[in-house]
Image 1 (tube, rainbow, N blue to C red):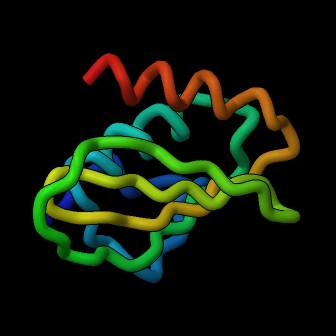
Image 2: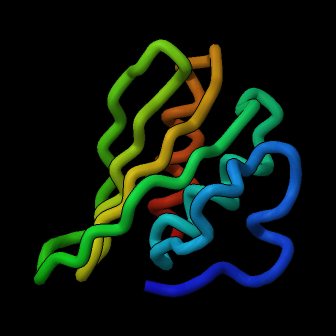
Length: 98
């Protein structure tokens, strides 16, 4: 688990209730902040896990997407508020580059 650098969690899109993120979630957050179709990013809980592979799991919710970001040793839930379902592909492409 790691805290994001100053500036990454600032701005009108970020919910300020939690500030702890995983390194893999940071990649998704950076991509989401760049996309004008995403109106808000809400950080969820971080769960420590053992092993596993990096991946994203998207679940449609009324406000947009619930994104489960799985890293090698942790998992974090993010909520991306959007009305554009096509952002999923863009977020996945950005995540897979890193």
